[in-house]
Image (cartoon, rainbow, N blue to C red; front, side, top):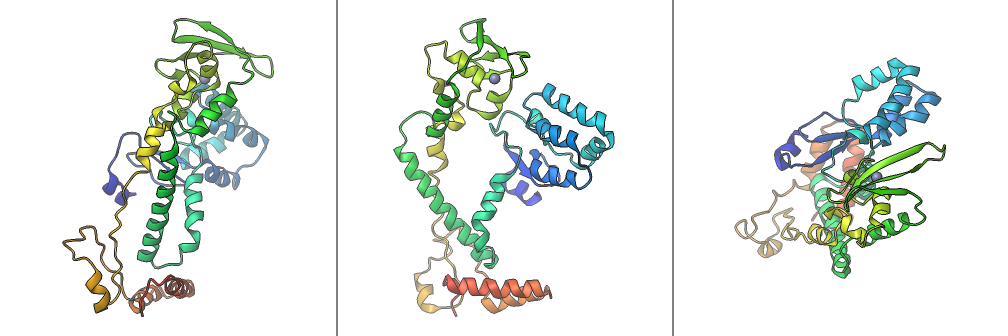
Length: 318
Ligand SMILES: [Zn+2]
C-alpha cells in the first residue's frame, strides 16, 4: 500500500477496496463478503443473517442505523467486535459519492485474480509482461467496441434505465420544474417519499449520486418532463469517457533481454531508444536458485512449474 501510495499519490475520489487491510489516505472500503465470512466464525444467528448484509447495502444512514440497532440490541458484543476489528468502510451509507461506485465487495479484484490465475506460476517479470499483454489486448477489444458506439450513454446503462422506467406507479409532486417529491407505499403498505433534484442529479434515497445512473424515483420524475433519461446519467457512464478510458497507448517497446545473444541483441533498441526499458530478469538458473533459497518444498515446486511455463511460452532462451 505504501508503494502504491508512492506511485499514484492520492487522487481525489480514489477508492481502495480490500479483503482486510490497513487504512490509508484514500477512501478505504472493506469487502463485505470477506467481513461476513470472518464475522460468522464468531457470531451466527438469525438477527445477523437478516440485518448485517442489509446494513451494508443501505444507501441511507437512517436505514443502516435501523439494522445496526437490531443487531446491537440482540448482541452488543458482536457489534463491538465488528467496530474494533473492521475499521474500514463497509456500509454504502458511509461511502463518498465521488467515485460513482457502490460496490460492497471486491469481486472485481477476485475476477482479475481468476483471469490471471493460470499465469501465476510464471517468474515475476514474465508474469508482469504476460499480464501487460492480456490487459493490452483487453483494452484493444474495448477500443474496437468504443469506436462503434454512437450514443451519449453506454448501452447497458440506457437499457437499465428503460427497464426501470416500466410500470412505475409513484405519486409525483413538483416543487419547481427541476425539483419534486416522489412517493408511494412499500409492500407492507408503509408510505415513503424521496426528494429528487434534477439539476444536482440527486435523490434523497442516495442511489443516484452514489451510483451514477438515475434511481427509479428520478426516472419517474424525469418521465414527467420532455427530456431524455440519458441526459441525467453521470458522465462516468458516457460513451465519451469509455472511449477516453480505452484509448491508452500502451508501451509496446518492452523487450526481454535474457542472455547475451548477439544476433537478437542487434535487433534490440538501445537504452536511449528505449527509455521505458525494464532491467533484464535473472537467467533461468539464477531465478531458480533465488526461489529455492526459500528452502520449502512449495517454493521448489513453484520454481519448477514457473520454468516449465516460461519454456512453453518461449520466454526463456536456453
Ligand atoms: Zn431515489
